[in-house]
Length: 611
Image 1 (tube, rainbow, N blue to C red):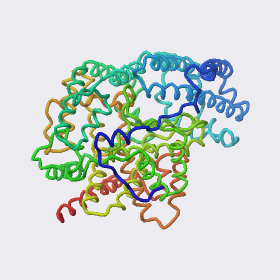
Image 2: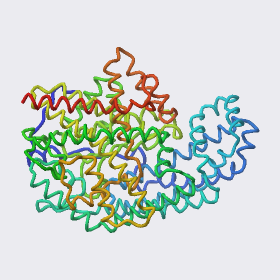
Image 3: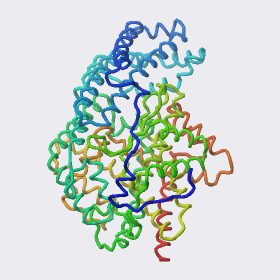
Image 4: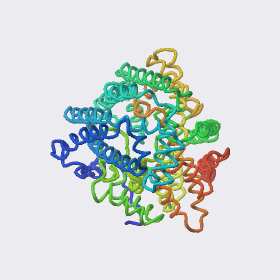
């Protein structure tokens, strides 16, 4: 690994060279191909095994438990094996589809897999419903008697939390089977519509990920041109995006009402295994900090850019004199692995596998899913990472983020298919921690005040995007879901809600014109995972506190950290944070996390005063 960082100045020639030969993932560890015998056999086996499982255990779980607790443990293990195989099928189909959603063969392949797994899953639905009808005392006393059943205690305890929101078995069956023509279909319509959009900038046509990347260009006119083109294309499709949003929001309201959720975000809190009060405290703390964080920083940035008023296309503009840097893929690899290795060699070794074994799909291309993600697939295989790598410093941080997820998913895989998955709030811990390690490593290499200022400013912006922007997204979602209860929302209605939240969160230095109204429409989290977004802010503030513990720890931090990651979904956040002396339920926890962002802005102000 290199100890120095050699950034290239970007121009068309170096960009073309640097972004050639980016790695594409090799999905053969899941299946040899879409038409492979192995995939077809697993598709068939999922259905037949699920049918056999239903015949064997439906209506008999209480009898099985009373006969011998170990037999119930064996039933759970069999259920887990079927779930793992189904997860493997859907992981492969989903990754193929994400690689190019515009390809009709990929779309059909994904749709057929989704329908097949929905049918198989309908035969398994009884299991968790029936499990939750077993008396609590009877089940937990049985776990004391049998170690094999006690192994599944975290999963069974989590399952119990869903109990009060379960519907009648037949209703659950109906909702499950209709999901493929309901929410799943609307999600797919969003993906295929978004992947088909083309944005004409500088005489060339680009997909959405590349078009949005132009908003970070050094040339203000190019940023403006890209921003207006994004607005134009989104507006041309706003009726479709508004229909999708209205339908899914109403669908959620119906589901929540039938299940008995009190608040519009309670189902997400339940899935995240986090209390509403904890999330409310986070949101309140961030909202209260808007003036001290985002407003203060962007006022300073406006001065750097020589602007009295900033437009939305100036938000992610690079600093003057910072240069337009291009980081080649090999350099990005060395930067991240070096930072990870400095913390723990084991962490770097796991991350290195993603590079060496083609577990990353890096190029931005037409039809590919925008943004980035780390897909855990199933514990018996390994995660895969999707990137749209364009060589920006921010792309390196995104890669460090997703590799953090990947390391976490590898370590948690030992918990098995039922307990490896970490709630979203804690799932962001390793990713944001990976970003922080990379940032600190790069910051330590800065040799001039200008370099340090540019690095600090980039990190502050990333943190504001992670904390302030994501909480603003959460506030927007809440307004949308509350307003939808009164009737359908037009694209203009949604745009007005969007502008009101953006203005509040980013501050008076911005002028938000009408061409920013449709920008809510491209954000996939609103469609795929309602209220997901606060998990980013949760993770960032948590990691800020965690990193402060690391900096002050004499020894033993790494071991505790790896134990946290290996736990997967087996422990509540309070239990996982206790060894570090942290408590997310405390009133000052979030303010401590936010104080790190404030401290970086303080340092920028000091550097500005010195220059």
